Image (tube, rainbow, N blue to C red; front, side, top):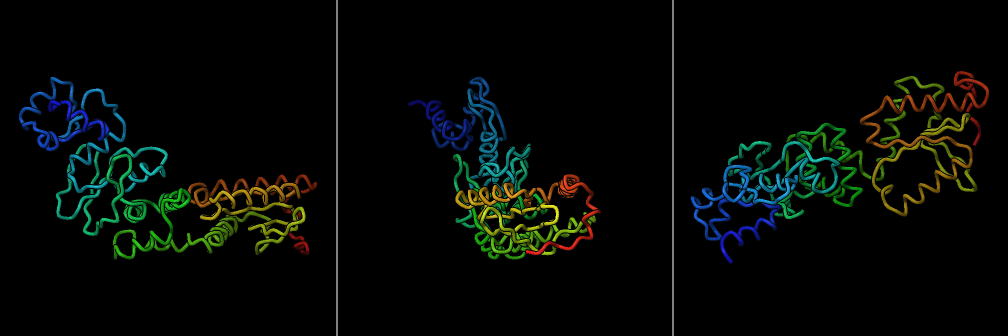
Length: 321
């Protein structure tokens, strides 16, 4: 096997990318490789890093090239790591890396790198042949740069994909100590504990509707309803109009058996003539005004079907239950 064949085999394992230092280990001289690379159709991606001819310009190739250029101890981090885990729909524009504190942060086109003094072996996982920070470490690092809505969405999505638990993120954050974004992340983790997540979101949505003066006001507590022979509670209800808002906070709702039960529950309410809106954290963070407008519209439709307006029922007593 000649040197170029060996290099091609290595490149196939690395998304079509090789580093000059790797080629030297295969028997090339640095000068020979750099001189012959252009003539053989190799593409220089970063200093000392080449894509071999025929390799597809995928995002994985970009990430691998950044890792090779940054050094063997660098890791894919933050939004790029989330994308590799399947949490983000689109690959971020810049490749995000973390490097150990004793390594110089690379200055590479299309790459954002930050240093860390707290990288552990347990922080490293392998995805698609790329060295990536673990899900728990990724969330902790993301807290330094992401807004609260994006951070919450990342935690919820990662948990629903069974990549991490709230407890695992909390434990990793505790070991990190006083880092940027730690306070924000701790508040989010508290909210997203499974036993309180729905109640926190319910409280936030109630406050949103109150702040925007949605009328009539909802029943002050979750409202128990006998629906098709089963007793269920509607999180936010207007029982005089048979309108409700159900919050889907986090966690157990993503499990298939629970999801099936949620569907049956929703069907019972629909068959009992209730009109239900469903609201999750992502909608609350990204489109609160939409929640308000849809709630008003649903209340107006229900009141119109009863031959009046929302103001007509605003002063009525709550029905007995």
